[in-house]
Length: 233
Image (tube, rainbow, N blue to C red; front, side, top):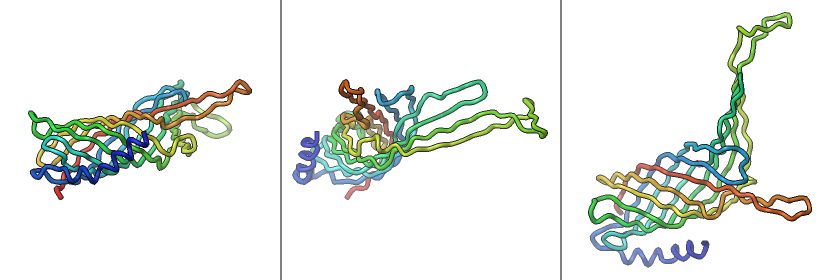
């Protein structure tokens, strides 16, 4: 995977020379939301989708009338939610926020029949910047009315929040395959991308107490939806 990524980086200057004269190099700042969850044996609770945000910029270099090479940099807050735990008078929500800086390299193919519509596919390297586990506990508790007495009719909502740095459980570098669809209208770009992680975010060896060891893993699944504006250079 590393060899493929750096080979594509190496051909970037050559690709710039092959661009069609009728099209121009452009840069597109963009921002939007992420929808993500993690899945794998390293997680011991039921996962759910959570939302986050992303921002970055894309450089597009035309190769021909319908094909372009794109690269850039993106910051994305992804991770996973967990199924809410409920009891009679209390509940607990928990989630993991994992943030990455991504460097993608993709081929973009424009539709000859629908102006502005394109699909893209490539490879991407992600550098983890932080990973934190969060929890919010909510409960109903009775109020002390004095003399050591309490009343079930006098109650209040009580909330407690906790967070923990779990970056030590995550790999610093991951690789994934981004695939997506974009549409351009008057230089306004709407883009949706799914990232399939091929080097999993978590891979830890578990000691089986003298019977060897095995690896437990977890993979990010992330959908990014962004809105941007293309500036031609």
